Image 1: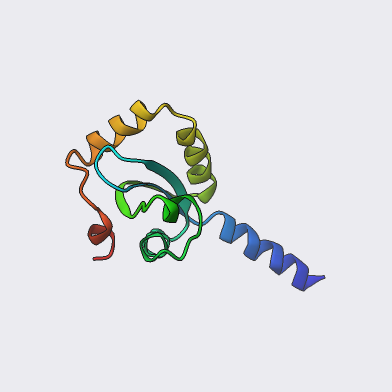
Image 2: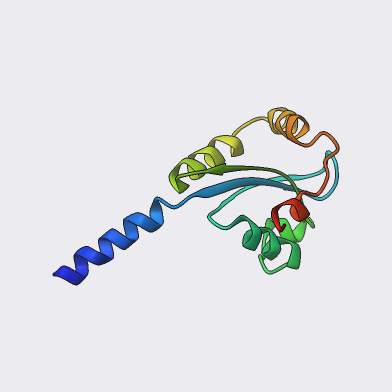
Amino acid sequence: MAGLVRAIHVLQNSLMAGGWIYILTNRPNGILYVGVTSDLVRRIYEHRSGFVAGFTRRYGLKRLVYFEQFDDIRDAIQREHNMKHWPRAWKVRKIIAFNPDWDDLYETITR
């Protein structure tokens, strides 16, 4: 029984770890993808390398143009869910306020 309690404690701690939401595109004002992860560098690397089959690979979405960090992954998941339902214009406004030139921010997160 003690092992089970420890497993629950570890699970709760991993769920409460921080998280990130991010937006990828293929070019300025191009197709947008909103995602969530607990490891931003690893996840963007996977997208850029084409390891992730699906929407991002199909449309060549490799340019990281926006990200936000959260202390709790559950908050990041909720934010991603909300942003996926935003109109495109709201997402574009958010990107322009954060990154007006639509620069690829991957290098800034790997330093």
